[in-house]
Length: 215
Image 1 (cartoon, rainbow, N blue to C red):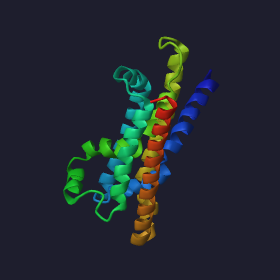
Image 2: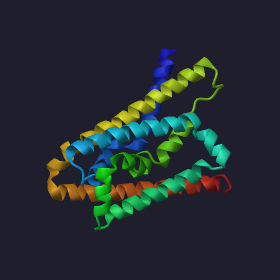
Image 3: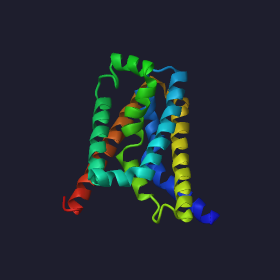
Image 4: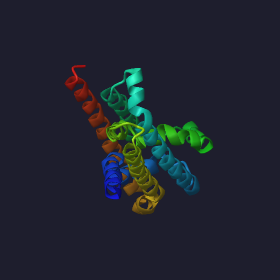
């Protein structure tokens, strides 16, 4: 029994970690929070880690049910989230600041609000991680003890994935800032391009899902 629960926990973590991809996303986080001081950035990293867990946990508990109620399919969620990521990455590739001066001041003053949108959703936990979480929902009656145990195991896996987000974001400047301004800008542009590609990939997967379902 314990072995099975550990397997469910490990499977959930290994399924979400590549989608969340905190090693690749940490330079993007550092670039988008360049207006913040070190203490505020660390606090924001903690909030994003917490909100990532809360978001995916809610999706695990009620996501599939809510999608059925509103008649929204997973491919549509992918397309919408992919468009949000594309827009964010396109702005990052431009010469203008990732946030305007007014938005940077707002980020400092309303860090809690910005921690969820856009920093958690869609930049960190986007449609890909939501779709993966929907596939992790345990089968079986909710009142079945084994189903409840599997929910707990998957929740633990989500918690580990969210913890990895916090750790990579929290210590991102230790590596990035040692590269100097030129190295930081290079990684910023590469990271933005990767985020752009992720957005396009998610949009394509959503379109392909709609085509396979006969739209």
